[in-house]
Image 1 (cartoon, rainbow, N blue to C red):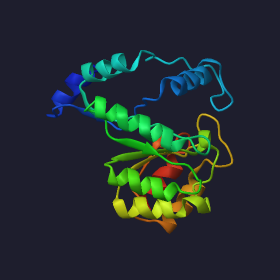
Image 2 (cartoon, one colour):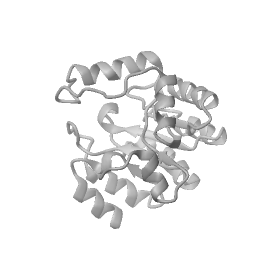
Image 3 (spheres, rainbow, N blue to C red):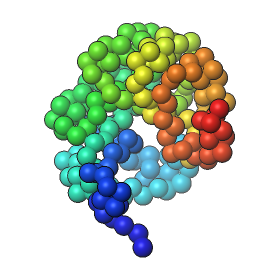
Image 4 (cartoon, helix red, strand yellow):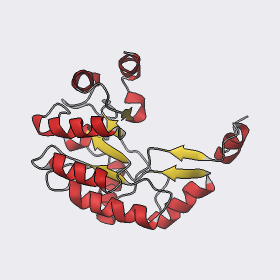
Length: 207
């Protein structure tokens, strides 16, 4: 018999749940993301109806009702000069919604290490990177200092690096393995368990 999330947490003796992979985005950005899912965009590959489509306040209430005590915003930049706009919005959202972690993102561009350091100093608790949508390699030299800053901080990075739902030249465990060889103390959270390369990412985690 399956349990609802609140009962599940209670059965484990937990006061609630912590969802590290939820998305809250600026309204125009969220509309574009939903459009990609609705129209089977090139990085989605098929129609993918979204279950939760309400306004932010409604979605927050849904999480609360499900017993989620802390969650994330996880915006992600897909072009230069976008990350700080998203970071400003996410910081404001976290200020308005106390359960939300202070989330931030970055992109391989000049100055990325400076704004990542600034966001950490301002209390950023988690970062999101989406190499499939962003269309970049985690080994990009423009990110070298960024990874060093995050490794030293120990701040987790939710990294969409698996080749699902549509693979690109930048997805898969290979680039992540190279990244971890260079920065072995990085706190990476591989989104969606690395789908579809579950086994490869599990081996990488064990290694």
